Image (cartoon, rainbow, N blue to C red):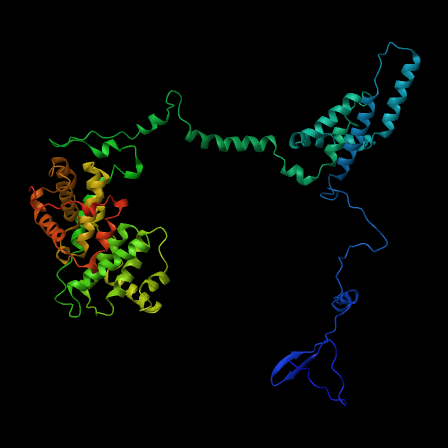
Length: 504
């Protein structure tokens, strides 16, 4: 670009600010001024005045600060006295002392050493002040605790100085006198220690065992002995008795817990609601469940979260009529609630909005969450078939591939609308029986009847419904569950051959 013309009558622009605007563009002159590096510091010099501390010395005077000098003013004198005493002790011990049977010249030199040492030792307080403080010093000697290095230094001084044998002029007394009052208060007296022991002993006595009853870890477990149960004839084992020492399986309450869950199934009955849902169909519900399984797999949620979310959807649709546009919103809100209830680290609300492809807003999802919780009366302790299945499989002591096959049958039935009205405990028993039949592992045993509380005739119709659902060819849009359990992680149980006839 050609340099801009400058009129002769106008002053030339400065070298630093050589910017000329032309047609709205800012350009810089070709001849730029490069300042001298020595003068550049003056241009950017800070003109602010630095503040000084109130006690800072002037420039002429230089003060030296001693390390650990002014920590406490109270014990400064005692430290200097002990340091001087250590110097004197080193001088005396460095010179060899000859026995007293030597000549008089040697004794004179010893006297000179002793007298010179006495001059260097700091003078103690007058006798009057010491004698007045005698009764107080005896009490203080009981209260104070002098550090071990100080006592060693004082003992060395005592051994080297045999002249100072009186208690009135000893360094020990002077060190006690110069100790601060705060350290005396903080020091623990014999009375305080006796009180502390009186308080601690009863507390320790509670934890201690009486003599003759000391026991090891194995004996402590026996304090809660396993009760002897009379099992019905034909029951192979008592699972709770075998795991009595495992507190995580709560064997003391396992039977009562699952009996309580079976009784609560009456509170969460799902009826045939599709007649009242004008805008929905069974196929749309199956698509929603298939999408929820994909969300559970992508977010790596627990299986209990999936089962609870499907239950919330069915219970909500039983009582409220929903449009076609809000069906996916109901599924996302149910997963959001279930993840809060079952997950240790639930996904954020933004994650659920993202998997819905931005079809709903933050406010719409929160409003649906509130509506679901109100309809459920905030009671989320719903008995789930997945929990029953884990209990029944543990009681039957089946292998992990067999349990995974039963899980596949149970999860595949979530898309089947014909199974919504069945009891969850019976659904678990039917799925386990069908898995045993597909693996050729026998039929329903007495042990399973004892732990589940059901006989084969109680859930035979459910077994037929589950088997028909497996034989039914699903469309490609509902292939999430089958693809999930076709993986090696799940032992490829979806590829197990189906049974045409069951041994009922």
